[in-house]
Image 1 (cartoon, rainbow, N blue to C red):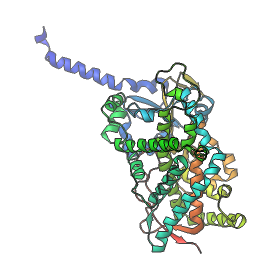
Image 2 (cartoon, rainbow, N blue to C red; image 1 turned 180 degrees about the vertical axis):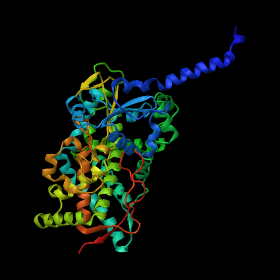
Image 3 (cartoon, helix red, strand yellow; image 1 turned 60 degrees about the horizontal axis):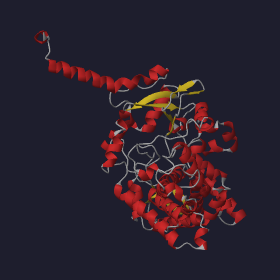
Image 4 (tube, helix red, strand yellow; image 1 turned 45 degrees about the horizontal axis):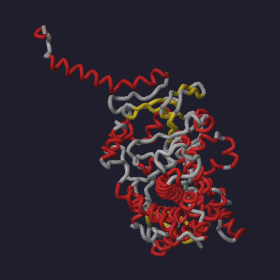
Length: 505
């Protein structure tokens, strides 16, 4: 009977396996069709991942415009729901936060990062967030202001060296030195002086964490086959460079040991991040498998995980934003004129730049806000749906990843006319009051927004005000116009940003 078949049994088996494999690969792709949600057509195995090659933010913008703000796409076989409707964003990130508390996490990122605010879930996240949030209160930031000002003076001194020589410089390198010095001193009591020591291990190690490519074979594997991440981690293969991670772990351990061995009345009065976490340490949380774990405090591993995460985040994104704001002011001299005029009037009235003074520069704040609109620190952010939920007529099933497309919203011409142009006046008091607050999301939204937002804003205000008090920032023949962003999920800049400064008379 088998002899009558046109193909051998072996080829029949191969064919059946091929069909089964194909069905396995495409089975999830009916998810959004069943939900009545449009989206780009996925291809077997990759889904829409290959479209990231044009730039994730550009892929998001293209889909946002084509599919009317709400659409579904696939990373490998994994469905992702993208929601750009502002009313739905408000519901998900604020009103229905109890159903959308958690962020997406990846297996295999290591125990340390599993204990950071970015990865913790539900009650653990709330407990740790409540322990860390007081670090960034107005009172604490006011006490940190002197350290931030000192670092800003170091930034000005570094620029003065270039001005005296008449040379151009990479503002991105100096901005990174400034923000590393700020987060090291205000967060951990560590004096790095990376402005004059750009090859300090803290700086080089931090930079290595942000070397990212969507076409890195490891990244592709983890995005397409998330279950492999845990397996690879057992062999020491993770997203993060082990040598750099070990260095930061050692740096945090050293800082903690110094605090414990030199515990004095002065140390206990410190207001930095590390000290406040140590004061919130609850040893009961360190006991593995302990029943009825306390609902307050923070464990040793959570201290380390959040220390490293905030050290890295405090360095990179703020440096990029400072760089891009200086770039915008150099390219748009009329905006810089207004900042300088405002700054001079303030100094004539107050006599110095201190914590209160840098919060009294509304046009400078408008320039920072417009830069963050054009170059948001996070191009998108996500939440995980805990249970089947109906939001403004949109059914979202349990376990669905819900993304918010920050970049496309910030470039929506119906919200922001001429979105490609740098126009700080978008952020006057009247303009902000007339605009939906969820149209501007540079730090995320709701209770799970960026915990270090206020420190970042303080750094930007001090850094920019101190620089423009002494200099005018200008372009040169090496300045990249327009500036290009790397294909990442943040505001990392592709090339050096070469500028010059001229001493103000």
